[in-house]
Image (tube, rainbow, N blue to C red; front, side, top):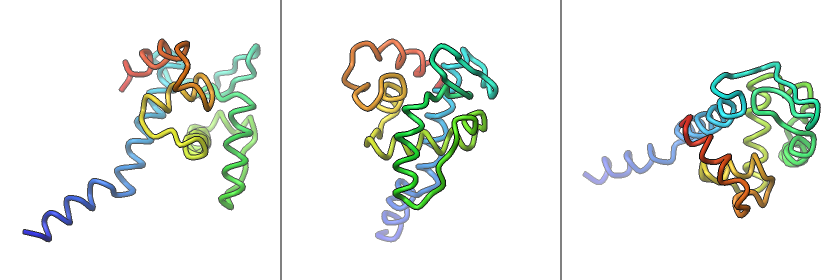
Length: 132
C-alpha cells in the first residue's frame, strides 16, 4: 500500500504534468490574444508585440536574461512568431517572476511582474480563463 501512495505522489509532481499545465496556460493566453485563434504571424505595430502570445520587447528581454543565466539560448523578437520559442519564452518569464498559478501567469503576461496585483489585469484574466 505504501508503494501505491508514493507512485501517486510522484505522478502528481512529474515533469510531464508540469509541462502539460504550462502548455495549457500558454495556449489559453494565445487564444485570448488571438480572440479564439492561434495567430502565429500576428504583429501589433503600436506595441511592437509579436506572435501568438503577443510578446513585447521588454517581456522578451526579461525572459532572455533568465534563459541566459540558466545556460540557454536567447531568442530574437522575430522568433516569437514560432509557437515553441514563444512558449519557452513565457516559461522563462514565469520562472523568473515566480508566476505559478494560471491566474498569476495570465495577469503577469498582461501587466508585467506586478500584474497579478494590478486590478487592471482582472479583465485580461477573465478572458484567458474562458479558454482553459
